[in-house]
Length: 336
Image (cartoon, rainbow, N blue to C red; front, side, top):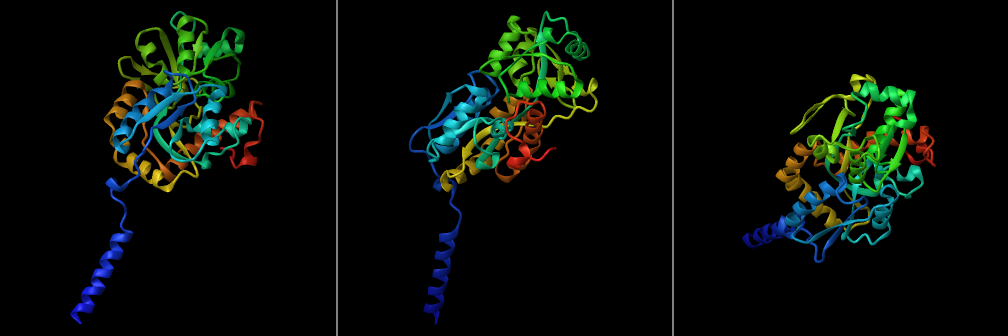
């Protein structure tokens, strides 16, 4: 009797061990370098934060991670390279979720946001920054010039669908007027163009303008948010709602994107790394504080829900502005 009871207990114990979740030591670890493709030029918002996250993940996963810049076609070329490549866990994309979710509307890449596992790191806000010698003294003056003399309002961005382009298009839709769009291969080149005087303004992200604002090379007129932005080392940048009260801006989440079909063990390891390492990363928190970003370490279903407002807003802004090739409603993106 005792022998039978002991055998049953041993069998139950063995079964429990078999179904127990794997420990951190049992998680997937890369056996060769992982490549993260940044589909924008070096120095921009995506490049900056991705290099910090890559360093944190090397320690968490125990392998080498290489960041490779592959700019072109508003970030779609590098993203498509990951989508079309092997989904073996060794090739990831980086960027803004609202870009990834609207490539299909622009006819650039046949993919939806649901085709990817999202690992978010920060949320970014756009700033209307002008050359230090520009005549615009505040946002009201800038908006008036867009209406009265739009040809003089040259705006540098990282291209169609970039955070900067989305920002100026949203301003145009809300306040009227127009501008001359000048595109570059990334946020950093767009900012440098404004500093050098090639353009009068840029509407790229705060993280890309922060150093030039602190140095007095750019003058920030407004942040595209309902709250002011307190930039460390500079001070307060007023919200655009001071001039456009009904302006709506959804958070622009950035992160690393892994295509569906990637082995489950890779996804499980990344989930654990985001929960245990990225969510507690001092380096990433410091970056967000110093550059005017919001710390946002989300993944899984939570990440998918958080990015939907920006994707919806951006997709319909592009469609209503005549820049989209596909009706967003036909690909499951409902009007906000």
